[in-house]
Length: 304
Ligand SMILES: Nc1nc2c(c(=O)[nH]1)N[C@H]1C(S)=C(S)[C@@H](COP(=O)(O)O)O[C@H]1N2
Ligand SMILES: [Mo]
Image 1 (cartoon, rainbow, N blue to C red):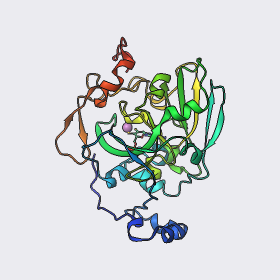
Image 2 (image 1 turned 180 degrees about the vertical axis):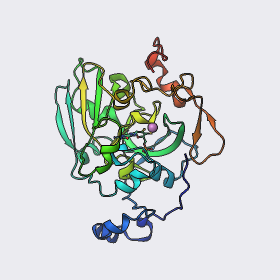
Image 3 (image 1 turned 135 degrees about the horizontal axis):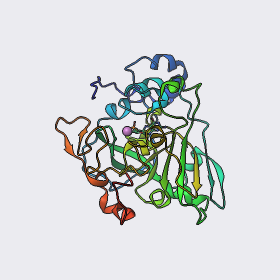
């Protein structure tokens, strides 16, 4: 499952940023060569948070070359190769539905709504691997509050851009597109739930979901939808891509739970990318102190 790749020096480390940016378009085709990582701009004014302090980070190279982003291909190395030319500006996000002030935001306006924080979160993929990633982001609640949700808003539905012209491999994704995801309103408003625009101090690489993706650390990775263009406050539980693709294997909640096996494999253990021995998978991915109360009284085998 794990691929070993040679480390490539971020281009921005060897070239002044101004030169790098002006050459960027000329370099487009060169950077499209496999194995050359186009490094992104640094994000300024990010405050550290306490989340994940002391945890060993998954190397940048693994975080940015071992990805799931089926719109750009289904192999782990596909998104890093095939999302290079993906256009993430201009970019707008429509926030609508059961809200008093629905509206369309420019992504750069969204990034100024709340202070940006670095948060080190564990990400556990349903496939059985995990990573530790220093995200840059802010609570999703900060954006949702801007449109003033009505009390009728019980769930939140998210949608990824679907542009077959920019995503020629999407036809072979094997899942319905556009990619859609959903959260219950209390999950969406939870302080652990963030929108991320960066990682490792830099603007989010396209393959990781630029310009804006969700990160929900106590749920399997597929809930963390990438490259969001639409967020809808809704009255009832919205459809989600993996549940549509295979409802027996992927439920709406998809909380990390070592006691509930995937129908085709155990979820008791996981491989932290970069480590040799497997680790025990933790209930709610280890975030139970913060989120277990959201599910009190719910049968987590039924609501998987
Ligand atoms: N639009 C979209 N979002 C997506 C996916 C996808 O295929 N398309 N894959 C999901 C899965 S299965 C995982 S594990 C995470 C991976 O995030 P990462 O590549 O940044 O580690 O993104 C999730 N978000
Ligand atoms: Mo995943």
